[in-house]
Length: 361
Image (cartoon, rainbow, N blue to C red):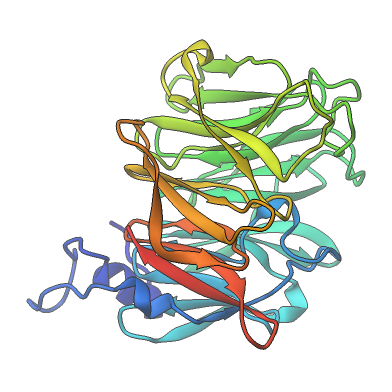
């Protein structure tokens, strides 16, 4: 485990039920309960000009006892859920959004000289990732790396590749390229997954009625890829569940896009996609309320018309049926994000803003 200076050193030494390493005293490591995140106000929009969280990227992330979140004032903050201290990682003028955290790595999108960039904080230092791309976004963190989408031109509808950055390395590596857009990546310590829109009529994700794509999984050590080729569109893969890849599917028989109704698919990350199975059909009253996955569990919001929004949880190996997460039924739920010890969602507060609700895992 790597430690950071200041708040980050305290957070990661505190852990969340894990033993602390490198501690200067012999006291037992601190733990943090999900209640420590309850009621924290988060930004109600991600600054994209849309109401809510565009593409379902959450305004919060959690790793161990570190909560990273976009405050309603627009700043990006990190809170130690074990001790209660808080630091600012970015000011509102930088328009930080879409934080992601894992182990000792935090990343987010920001604006720099009017350009969308990815910033990474690790080992006590924050860097803006640069490379053979015009601008960047959609980051996801693992304990040793960050993946993100890089636009090869200023055109938002233009060609994109997926890049991998390892803190401490001098350069980034393109891990997914080719015709059309490769987007929405995720990363683990062993794999990278992304959506490949090369098969689409216009080669890009533009939320029109013809969007088509496959999920591709790449083994980091060998570069070997497996394409989960299925009819229709598959996108937004998740690698957080042990040994599994989880992703969303929109079948070819109903109008697309239909981002408030989709099928959740799961499979073994090391196997061919023809063994992947449908887990559940999901409906949400708002588009882009995406699932989350970490460790032994996958979780999602079911939010059918006329019913409360409810968080469900199921073992990632599908060895048992899904169950309702106790206390996680509200008028609306957004942006579920799982950490090692807790799962966070955002829900509407009495004042109309958004606050975090949290459940133990």
